[in-house]
Length: 373
Image (cartoon, rainbow, N blue to C red):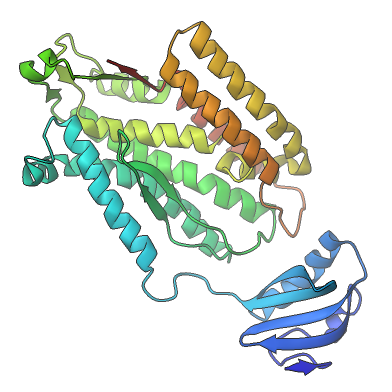
């Protein structure tokens, strides 16, 4: 439908007139399209029109269509519409992949003993999915609180040592202000760390796993050494529980590995670049100067890789940091979310952000994992 009159659901043309001269209005299903000419810079335009459309229940974005400027508005839909089958299928697949990976940590063959593997490895699966899910649900809950449209967590099954590549949520709505950007960014690491501390403490109280002598003597046995970050060591010290045993046949319960996963994921997510949680937090705290910080991140990670390789002589971790160096270059290019209202963040949130980065450093170890044939 073409018209010079706004649809009943949209804001009046009079309220848009100072920043956007409308010459055509169309509807396409539930979508509203206002064609016109911007009268102010884009950031000022969006700062003015976004709250007007949002008050009417629409998410709006400025786009160009066939050489014309248009304000495209779609109804805000917070939360899933029906059963999120993709999320469910990926979650179930990740349950299976983490059970498979967990069985190896309990030294149960999932091929020859699938039932025993499932009954034995479920604490590991619960630990890993618990810390990852809590992290992402922290983002999701805070997104709902600030009225930003976001998906439920997508778990990523993968045949790795832990059976997954993590979990993500996809932000579909625009960020209204720096408060929302900060709260959504910081909520995941903090929520995930709470779950991580609980999982680690529980795992340390559980019986260690004993490796059979046949496995120790096997020529195909691969030894995996985890680098424990300061936070995990502190929890073990506070509880008076060991992380290593004099008997080489004994190792910590795999649930502790779930805690290690939570700390490793927390540190990676707090790298201050792009769409990572750390990038969102720094963007909220210092504004556009975040780009200067992000530009330094790849050099720091490549430098860390060189230190691990030449000084610590650990090749596995070197590859890890090189990969993340290249990933950080991509994240820096994409950049973080830009809030509509880019006003200054309050001092309490800034202090909380600094505290969160300190916690992230306590989750860091230069050699997270080393595989020894």
